[in-house]
Length: 407
Image (cartoon, rainbow, N blue to C red; front, side):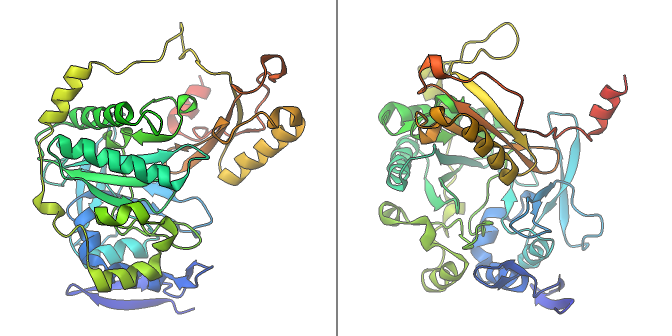
């Protein structure tokens, strides 16, 4: 394995370390292949990230291991990689990388990034997003066609309220729709506008979509509006996702949406598609709209319904039991299988959507929680809450947790 290779990109020299390292073993794609992919689609990829602070989601041990999220740009970065300082609700701040050109793109991929995760703001104005992002997230058991049907309804809602909707596959189970907006509104306003889109999609297609916040109450496709919260990022256009077949979050034309299939868009096929068709989102930068029509609808709809609260933690509306909290998805699922083996009479009553697998953002990586909704199990047969099959504490080594435990 060669140790490094220097590329000339955008008038700069970018060193690619371990270029022959296999990133996608099933397809034989190396780190250098991944860099070359991003350089081939650079114009399209940069439309999604150029000038935006970006979390570095680094797969340093390969795509089969959990990535870690690096908010702070490395101190030894090239002097041509800019940073922007973001402030978070926790009171902390981080100087995050800002990519401006294809050289910066290659630099980020060399660090072990596979997909790109920019914030919806430009470095010049960190308080006012210029993108509204809708993430369609299906509950288990939902067919792909239903997701696309909901996407078409979401398009109608956005366009009925003066915004241009831009569709793309997520490269995972769901679907993304973006709308560029004038950077005049706060994160709170943008999230409210996105929540209003979700509520209106549910109003128009109640059998297909949901805007319910609590996962155990959802049926169909969740129109996820919380991706517009200040600390959230979404895999951007042309991002390769960490799947075995190297799927790509691919921009589409709306006439392609009804017949599209997510598995059709991979690192190899998108290279061919881009060379032949170019970027369907080429004009996205010319279509900034106003949020006022959606905010006006929010006022007319009134506050969203809130779930009932108990005296302390939220009062559960469904009979949930928690099964595992684990560092990895595999460990969490192994715990679930042990629970199922002990409660085999219960398993036959469960629906696919009753198994709730949550990827939870920790300090610098994702950890996994599994709960089971017993709503379809006869009450007399419902097992009680038991000690967790896996009991991982993602905050055990946090400085504030150590200080707490020493008191």
